[in-house]
Image (cartoon, rainbow, N blue to C red; front, side, top):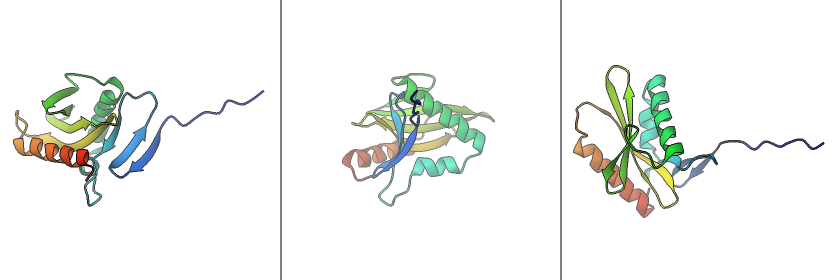
Length: 140
C-alpha cells in the first residue's frame, strides 16, 4: 500500500516586489510591497504593533484573500483600483491596510495606518497611490 504524500498547504516565496504566500485555496495571495531600498512598509508597521493587533489585522487580510471580491465591512474600494482592509481594534482604534490587486492577481499590501479621525487622511491615500504606481511600473 502506497503512503499518501501530503503537500505543504502554504509556502513563502520572496520575489523582487515582496514576499508571497502561496496557498491553493486562496483567491488572491497577499504580498508586501517592497521599496527600492528593500523595505516592506506594511510588514515593518505590523511588526511595531502588539501581537493581538497583528493577529486581528492578519485575520482581516486573510478574509480578503479567501473571499475576494469582498465588500463592507471587511473591505472598501478607495478609487483607482485602491482598496482598504478595515480592522477594528481594542480601545476603539481603527486600522486600515491599503492594497491593490496586480496583474498577477496578488493582493499587494501598500500602506498601513491607525486612523485617528473619521476621514482617511489624504496624505496616507496619496502615499498608497504612489506605492501602487511604483509597484505597477516594476520599480518597487
